[in-house]
Length: 379
Image (cartoon, rainbow, N blue to C red):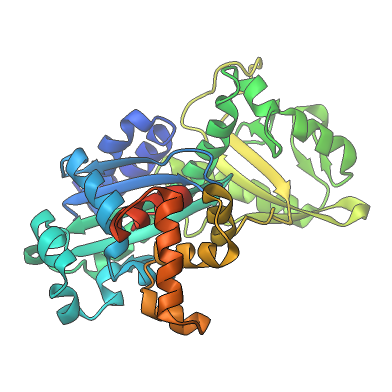
């Protein structure tokens, strides 16, 4: 099968399967194969720590891989490089000295036996309190991922981001309601389901209130209309591109938001468009819902930082929380002591307190507990 044909099929599969977690292993297997990987990992994490992580693995026993994910991932010296490249498709091993990495116990006892020496990694969503990541891995014999394989994953990232952003919004609402219209009404974001011509199939309560308050946006006559002609053309073009991309007829290179200004008030909003794989039930209209148009305030809500979150979760002091965040991020005790300008004995005292407050006994166990709280993984 030609690469373009496989790519087109995968794009449609992404939009069809992202909303069905039971389909993630099959989707992951296809994605991993497309970029030349043997083992794949797909994970969705809650940024505020209120939901447990959801993840899938392909090409490896799930229970064995879970041990690696929760007990060994934070020992990986590639971790700082991975975490510092959010939004990019990277080869994880480029962030470490190869010879030194091969001498670590992690490499000898986990990475080599698992056959995951080479990793292709990307973060591809960070909306609606959700961060989603994808990793494709393979062994030493297969060699490092080639530029063409990096490019393949990069082609899929915009689609993954679109699909997972809308999935995150719907999961947030469906936890409280099973009816689509009622679920959408529970969201703070304005969500408008439209057809390809931006005719409205359904607008949630936030969208209706926004249309009343914002002179630059209208839902009159059953269609979504933007007063600013330039923004209107951009949204219409984005709608066409999104639908064409979802069917595999076009390629999108980014999935960024479109900025619109609300009339005389000058209030800034962000608009994103998400293709729907099939008509949602319960819209109560004959208009075919093909797109979800999501509109949010242009000023994103500030996220609670990691140290503060750990302090709240485990009842830590400020100094303990800073150490906990450093440990969870893969920093050594010596490096932390140097950065903070404190004695290593002080750091060890704080570490003992962390063990007690997190009910752990070994540093690996502590890191796993902290990272479960933060909902951050290696990939």
